[in-house]
Image (tube, rainbow, N blue to C red; front, side, top):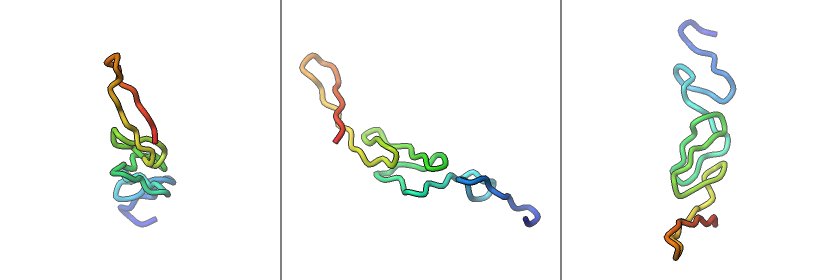
Length: 68
């Protein structure tokens, strides 16, 4: 280890070890927020943000979600 450099725990990198590492990339504008953990945008779900989620207004005025 060098002076003034961090030795990061597995799953973390960068200055101060504040950047998470996702071995598989987060898709559809998802963000890597923890080791191998993607935060998906509101219309996607799943480990890599690959599953599209559609919302549709039902006749009874409730919202139904569908995964495709």
